[in-house]
Length: 224
Image (tube, rainbow, N blue to C red; front, side):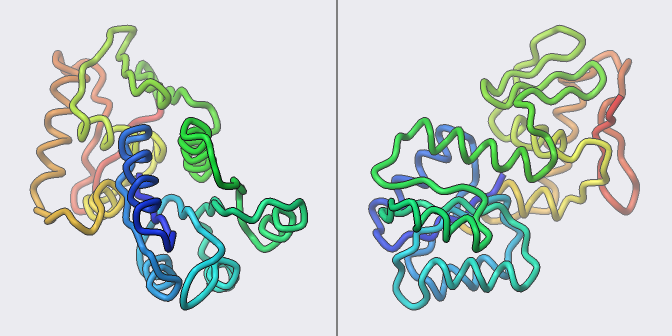
């Protein structure tokens, strides 16, 4: 999943990014400016935006208002030092999905972020079940027909995103956009390589056929 962190303190922003990369396996983009952050939020398909309120250029409440007025439904977690009850009420009433105050607990930030992403895809349960495939998004453990499957980090991220959209066609472009940040150089054949590897590991005997190719469109992780 891909997250945008809009936070004007560079060190804190990078720390948050690292926490999310290590604790949740997210791809993370960072902006230290309200204007730049708004531009990124409008023009890129993020799964979650972590938003400070006190920003240079445009403040966080203005950013929230503008993206909601544009119909952007990306989950927004406000992360700010403003901790009064009225601040929290205002943030939630203006379209934020959650509100966390600084200083924050690292585990709580990761847990809230993962929960927001799951809810975005209508998968509130941390364990995603697709037929004989079980994916625990908390431990990042995968089982097929009760047998544990060892995956690389990118194989797991690819599978998790497809599981969140289980039963839907997922294009290669969508996988690239949601699994990588701006710093990665995209190559068109990398997704095919991960899909091929997942098929070999999940279904070595070609019994379940969990990932289907829809030619000219993308891939589907079967629901049953």
